[in-house]
Length: 399
Image (cartoon, rainbow, N blue to C red; front, side):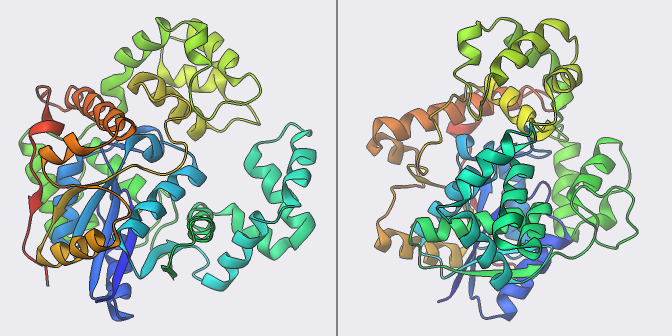
């Protein structure tokens, strides 16, 4: 058995995701396990479809097992997002870690990962930060200064960056998985106007939200599941549905509560606190807080964390459990391996939660509350308790 683990959002599952699975199987993977974000994603917004609908899409398109990346890691920056995902992949005992990248070169990405782990890099980054630029730009400049332009340029593309963070995390955790990458196919990340037959996830989401024809942009089974969710009133979910609720939460927070949010630095909480006082829309909050140093995506994640109750320290270390969202019979074989690895408790039944330690139970409760809020943002609001009552998705192998 050769298991390929894939850290994913599948927001929604599209042809680019299918290509990675196909290439992994062609390279020898007999089983595919996805570590997937839940109802909220790393760009700081709710997923277009619920985690259960996206699990169905994944299982229908070649994935054998889907486990959830818990909320504090799902809405974190690239480094902690990657660390959380790789830790769960390692707990599953995967043999490979598969991902797409703009360069498609594992050796080049490994060289960049080693550069970021170099003990001399941090001093150079601190020097660059004195110029008032973003951390990402400072890091890129520091790598260029110490390791050359070719390596530094890899840090200018979003999928390369995640791939580098995955390799870093594999090293830090001493994980056995071998990194496996393919060159990203189709439109570039967030590309809206490309003529490529493989559209970006961003373009697909915008097409769905604007009630356009999305059917040719997704694999047939993925498109059919999306259609079913839309007809049932469970999709699409949009950040705009949450806007006034988020603004209400932000306006009632004390200044001290802002200071407890994750991913803050150099008084960002003060800037956000003042922005909330002067803004009447979320976009205004983002624009008033944004600067050369703080990116739009980082601010969105912090604002979403404030709304959902994610605080600094919740994503320290690695996730405390493996929660199963869906599987087929090959997925049960992956779980059997994970039980032999015995690195993390596995949640496949509600009774398994009773055996968790307090930290894990707190993360589960946070996830439950976040899903209750997500349920209010569906076109037809759903009641509380979906996280407690929705069972594991069981599917037949797609091939």
